[in-house]
Length: 596
Ligand SMILES: [Zn+2]
Ligand SMILES: [Zn+2]
Image (cartoon, rainbow, N blue to C red; front, side, top):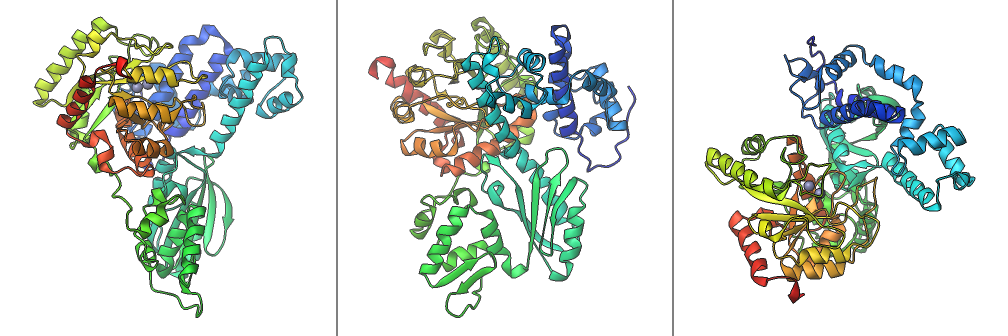
């Protein structure tokens, strides 16, 4: 395979290339079962590229760099090189002639498989999403054979989530895009300070637009706005004025707004554009009551209109005799009242984390060997004192779940690695399935030998799952409930749970609840985290990492915890392993279900 020279370091190919491979997989899926190996190959290439730490061109620039990536064989490797050279892939162009692009988009809608899409295309001549919506509205689907009303309902729900996904992106994606653009803004000549604002700064789970507030001398504004509008990522310019510009990014279609203010207005502007709107309204009301006027330019005396000093957010909050309110809390709940009483807690920080309690290795569906993971953690997360390998259990056949007999070898492997590392970093765990009747798919005789047991639901998402979860809590070997709600943001709604009941039993049995930090899970969500903590439940943050780059998701878990008002003490894995063992011991002493 030929090497390519890395020309422009800033160029980012991964998102577009991953999207092409995803669409190629969809094409082959549509074309039928005889292409199933191609479907698997392109799905796997899509996942690999999405998980890369560096741009694909950097791997392609190294001898054998592409071959060393999981799921990239000779044929796909050649297509990557072709794409890097020419910006397109000939095979994909050919495929697009066979499968209309609109149909590929349809297959991304939850509830629409290739067979359904084919039927819709052949029988109702539906070519895209718009035509599907029109057909549903005209009641045409109900007349089709095999389209029961429940199926039509599922398609409608899928369409709704699909629409949501295209207007609001995941926090993780927004964070990466936002930080990238922010770095470029900071390099524009004349910029003194710049920061991300809006819901991205508040770390909401999904983000609409990206907002950036920056300061510069007024004389430089015009030049800055022009330079911003012509950043290499710009697809089109929505607005270009004296003080602001709005662009739409290539590929993702994300809107980015830049607002320029003078140095002395920076704090007020940042506060204003960070929001939330409700927080701003509450703050302005408080200002009025104190004889001030607050807007995006500053704080003013309501009578004389004189501007009060205060160029930072901290100074502005202080003017109103409030404690500084971290952006994650600015949602017009109880934060202003709490800040007035000076009771805003010291929120959890990333550096408080002492370990990861949920991750997968090649022993089930993870991409990396345990030893590779352990060495990576030692290097990249030196503060971690422990990581728990929680590979899947037998019911997860697609994920190559472990059989009870496999655990002897697994234990031996973990002990070997710890010995080699000279410390007990790697702990023995499992992610067991909570079956339909609430029982687990691994026996207690095995679970008792594990250091940490996460129990999760992986099937039956449409019913109320409270009873299943309660029964799992009743097992004295279960330490944590994994991704408790089962939702996938923008793709699948969570199942019904009686949260009050669940929190009560978690607390009673000494079982923790997880914040699963996968970007599309963030499960528990922030508002339920707040309720769980209030009910006395301990929180465990797990990345559920299936590849090395996913350990960075810990920062997302921390963001959710912060939005849930968590302090360090509320989070189990900010503690030493000794404390973790005590937590487990209390549950073992408590016994089991007959006490519920
Ligand atoms: Zn899981
Ligand atoms: Zn998992």
